[in-house]
Length: 217
Image (cartoon, rainbow, N blue to C red; front, side, top):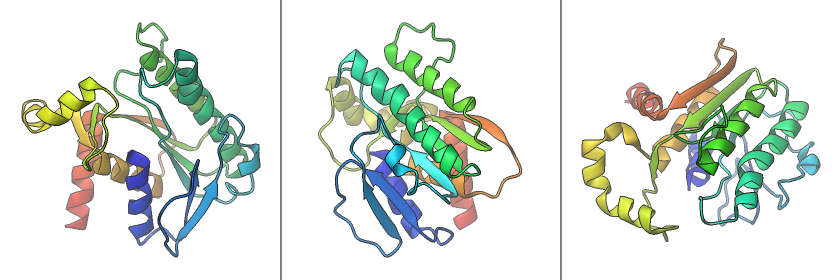
């Protein structure tokens, strides 16, 4: 949902000379800037070492919904996959920026009763210790899909139905998928002197999107 928008934004961005999409199945798009790499086993990203060599930044959006997979699978996808990818990325491109899609409520202490919150917090902790010069952790609240899709469960169907009213009442609890993607790509493209890890909550992401709009106005 977010990764597709991130790729589109990167391909359209004038500062991006080329974009490598690492996917589990082939994309139905063609673009002169696009380098598509099919990789199905994210538990082992060793084969991506050459692909990830010389990259300036990466945007990691792979994830799963709670309830859509078993608890063991959720932990594997939420923790093991991004950490394995980050390991190979940092070894191949030590100076690369890394934008990671976490989630609102991520609990780095590991005390939350919600598996999603514990696993996202665990992933954040491991990424912060991975040695990236520039690490950007995004914690969006409800991500509005923008384009019609089959919602994963009843709560998401309900949220989509009441989204206009919910957005008006609680603007800092929602973010459009395309806006989130734009912020994740944009921050990775910045030539920033800031080093270390930065965590962006939903209100921070909304402010970043507004800043992008003002720059492009």
